[in-house]
Structures are given as structure tokens and as C-alpha cells.
Image (tube, rainbow, N blue to C red; front, side, top):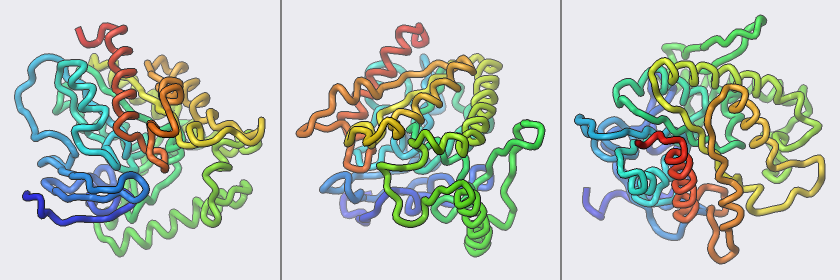
Length: 331
């Protein structure tokens, strides 16, 4: 497509670049290319191109030569606000000198990532799977309606067993997604209301309940759910002989402000997620300390909204690469 490709000004790629998917709720539109201005992230336009599988990645290569690292995650992995060749996956490929694939998608939850691992990765035959997880976004396992799409989701039954709730076939139709989504949204907000949590009106990112110690009990179910999902992911990778590595980056609150109180801990999602990864013996890299150390007022590592910029992607790739080399996974 020529440089005269349609230009869009959007907050993220959640709606424009996505379509209904019967397995995951939504997935990228194949062979789509646009120049996009991401509000609050950059002043110019970024070229976004999806390949034939709907991933913001290189054209598919059928042959496999050497190691393959497959990266999954949300909008940070997809690369909101940055050019395609300035994402951590491209930097990682240069450093590892092996094939690095990017299957990141905006607003993808850990539950959807788990389903991708269970249903899609065999086709790529990866040696390593990297899951980029923005710790604040772990709450997406509680969201069953995202950006106009219903999602399949996991839940815990009365015995604590993990169950998958598949989507209704009617979800393929936009009007029914809205109806189902309205119910899901009401149900979620009712649960939050009963717990004294208000996210729908006057939301303040600096006092998000996920950072508040006195709201910890409300999120216990969420973290128990994440625990079971991690177990499934790790068991699958072990059976397939795939190395699984989580990558955690610094979040907006850690970078832009100090906690106003000892009862507000911006590292709380990091701490709880890392405890679960350690419990499940899943390797992880926490790049937040490096990102915080390298952040400068005149040379930041993230955009104003917390998405990694070019510098942040490069640092994140370096931390991932160092860890994989140390573990001998790239030999």
C-alpha cells in the first residue's frame, strides 16, 4: 500500500484493526495497513500493517531455521504508538539472531493468551514463548466484554476447578454482542459496587483499587484464577518441551508518581503476580527496575499513558535477551 494509505487518529488499535474471532472473541484483521496517530503517544503517524494471519508481524515464513521465539501480549507487544521495527520483538530478533514472532494484540487478556498457547502455537513450533504482561492489566481476566467484543473466559467453580466459559454463537453478530456485553458489564459493575469499588465514573489511575491494600480481598479471586491459568500454560509448555518466560515492565504509576501513602502500593500487582509465577515455577524477567533507572524527564521510557516508547522497547528486549542467554535457551 502506498504512503497515501488512509490515515486514522485513534486512542489504540482495539477497534480499527480487530474483528470477531470464534475462538478468542477478537483477533487482528488480516492484510490491513494504515497510518495511525495514537493520541497521547506521538505527534506523527505510525505505520501499522497486519500480515495474512492478522498479526502485526512479518509475512509468514513456512521454513524453520534455528531457534524460534514466539511473543504474546497486549498492546505493548502489538506496539501501540511505535513503528513496527521499533518494538521489543524486533530488537530481540537482532540480539538473539533467531526468528522472533509477534502475536501480540491490543487488550488481549491472560486468559486469551492461554487459549492462544493451547490452540495456535503448535503451528509455529516455538522453542521459547515470551508472555509480556503489563501487571496492571492482569485484571482483564475479570472482563468478559472488551471494546465491543465478548470474550471466552475462565472461571473457578465451587470446588476451585478451572472452567472455560465459551462464547455464545450469537456473539458473531454485533447487535447480540452489545446485548450480551451490556449484561456482562452490569454484572461486573454490580460485583464491584458490592465491594465498594467504582471504576465506571470519575476513574483516577493514581488510586486504582488494584493498588490499595484495603481492597486486596476483592482481588483474591482474580489472583486465584490467574494462578490456575498459569498452571495450565506451564503444564502445556512442559509437555511440548517449550521454555516459558514472562516479561514484566514498569507501569505508568511507578514511573510518573510516587505513592501518596503506605497503603497505596504501585508495585502491588508486580508482587502478587511474581509470587504466582514463582509458585508455578515459571521463569520471569521484571524489567521495571531497569526502566525506572533509565527513565529521564527529557528522555522517558514510556509515553504519557504508560505504553513503552522506542527506548522502553529496547530496554525490555535487552532484559529478555540477557535472561534467555543466562538460561542457555538460545544455544
